[in-house]
Image (cartoon, rainbow, N blue to C red; front, side):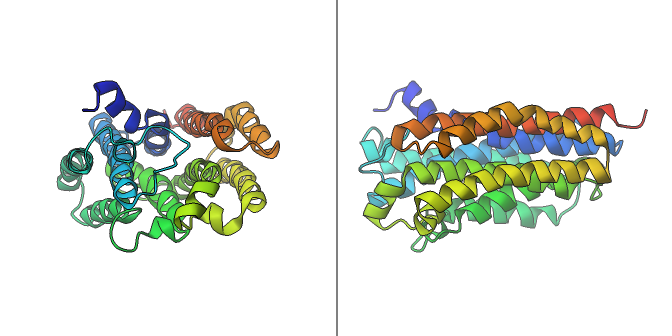
Length: 293
């Protein structure tokens, strides 16, 4: 049986900054729009964290039963390693989806019913990333899901449930956070190119190949800071505080540029996640500082 430590490891806590970051950025937008509601921000964070854990367990289950994780280089996968049964991991994924769903329903009930459509779409997209008979994550579309749901929708949605309007900067901030979330996935899939090719998993990294995947990783970082500049121009120059993430960003990019492969790319995942979190914290701080008093 899997230990508590192994269950925590399989939940992939290093990916959780990708859940916290959009809530930070979206809440910054809400504060600047004079619409901050602390308990709604907290519920949005619960939704984001639970959904991230659910995606991780769902991927563990779906990849494990397909045999995709048989030669995995990265963190422990419960099903692939035989540490837990597929039923146990699927149950953990469904329980996490349930937590996200309950918190989301409270936000829907206290905001507007049509947000339910976005919540349902997020859960469906999360499951079919690697689940179902034709998972879109196996057809180079994973980055689309990450950008839309862990970037644009998460940031704009967090702001909307508090302000009940599409506030200035929400879309640009969402695109910036989404670009860095995509960079995490690109780095992960860059590491897994050899094993994914072996089992026929056609991620975007497999389609692009090693060199162009590295170029895409760097381009996503550039795009993120471009989005921060757009928030600065359209909302407040204080949004440039997002650039405090640059040292972390440069450190991660340098490893990718040097041609690191396999386990050597694990540090890139960590640093890219931290980059996204610090970037979002910078946006949050800038928007709060510039908020009308």
